Length: 555
Ligand code: DON
Image (tube, rainbow, N blue to C red; front, side, top):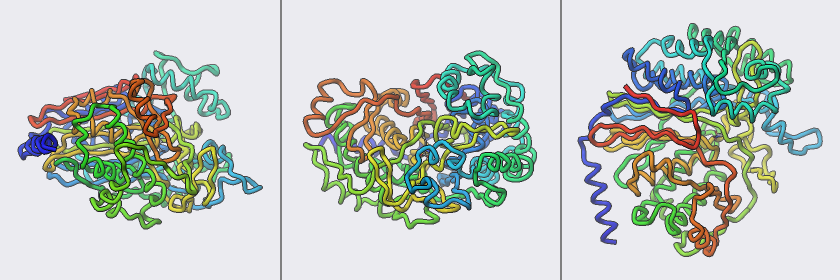
């Protein structure tokens, strides 16, 4: 207890005022090319927002697994005066959608229709969101932010190792889409590392976006090409959907953790609420005195995850359609009530009740940016699965998302395969589907100290939690916090999904003996791109080594 008090005192002292602004401006993303060119905005006098927008657009060219103009995402921004805001550019359900749209003629759930068909495409939000954020907070002219993406799309770039590997994996699912094959294959074979990838149609789309702003995507030729493909394939997005799409500036969700402020994305993302709920629970445990991935640390983390994910499934959805009890969920009282249900000696049991989880893809991408003026941006964007719906819009050169798969397919429907039937996240025309993306800023007296986020579907929330705990409780360097092995618990199914070698055999045995089921994940968990700003203003970028193409660039 005394040790705990001492630790808190040290943390409080660390939180003393006077944190210097970052010495260097920095961009870190899953594409080293995008980071470098995005950081070029600083050379022209741009701020963190300019660099983040330019990098996000570049990712649509160099990291097509998840970077996009045909998807959506969220951005959390901290301004030099310490205030914070967020931009929600989540996709929406088309106006012709309905709660039963993923059932076949016999009323049976059709997973392909939900995740892999033209009906899985939501109305894209990225261009509107990036444009809105720029119009509020950018410094450079819009066209300057789009220009590097146009250039790389039209002149081409050399396919990187990670891109080559992902193309090889996805190509079988692209074969039925000629425009997708034309873009990413040569003579029916995936492009290989070192090949030149030129995307002329995408370059022209980006030029329209450069010249006309969001209208260059939601109206005119780009819109025509989207609607034409929709009609050709029996899809339901029409001009009216595109014209009506609105990105929204929203208040962030905020909490505190051991003297730091935590600023994250609220609904329609579940990320911020679940993260703050878990941190509130953890704060009364002396996590720092427990070893990283020790029995005690892993047990308490898993119990916090279990509870936050139960609340997520029951209560979260589009805040414009569902009354989400945000204040209650992130309150200390709620944490205190949940705390009473946690035993330090035994795993709880997740009761299946009436819901399970929908299938989910594993591609999304996160980028973090800081500038020397003290602005910080955390931006997570996605097409949902790797390469989204796999459908490249003919003539427009960009991939469409399959984000409709994040909606619950039918109220009350629960299957062993993992479907969820709760009401807040059922399909409704114009509604935003629930997300797990968790772009997050940690600040101290209003000054950014950590910018963080990750891909990984529902694991995103726990990945971000584990990095924050690694940094604040275990006092690891940002790179060590990213390198540390990860695990995930999501209430149901009732098991810990762990990276290979996450736990020693002794720790695994001890966790199992207190009632945890442990399954080894087939894939590594997430890909964190983070920046730490130390009290003296020095910055350190953390690039997840789980994937090969990432990189940081600073000025
Ligand atoms: O919005 C979401 O939560 C999911 N569509 C994100 C998918 C994802 O992160 C897959 N990532 N690696």
